[in-house]
Length: 194
Image (cartoon, rainbow, N blue to C red; front, side, top):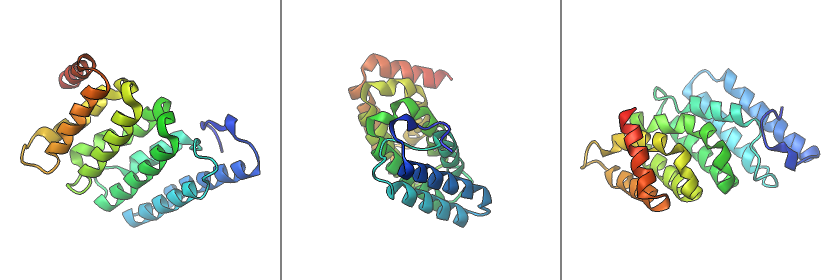
């Protein structure tokens, strides 16, 4: 089941096994009934990705993959599930590097809405991911998703005394530095007016 991956670069038995293993792990999410089951599914999926280092630039079934990650970032789930999911985001982003750019919307669908509802232990992890892989990793091409990115972290500016306030300011300043003030303020106003 390699419906939407960049599979044209790889062929062979090992690649087919990789795709099949990822498909099997993604299917296991359908049988998850409680948050502990989700954590187990996430750990197995992470191990599958790590177990095939020869295919670093391909995430098989990326649309379903992104959907499962977004489901695991549901605000009603425990912070433990969120942390395990963010660890999997880290694996994906580090594997794909700059190549994540065209597919960033697939992964942003779950990641952006989480910050507003995330626990205090999860928020710094989200900000670290956003700064490392969106702002710095994508550079100027982050402007394509910048309104959503800015809107997602604005709740971190509500309390100047909160632990994440300095991190949010750092991410926003980083956005200005990696794009331009004009692009940043355009995204900021777009986010505020939506």
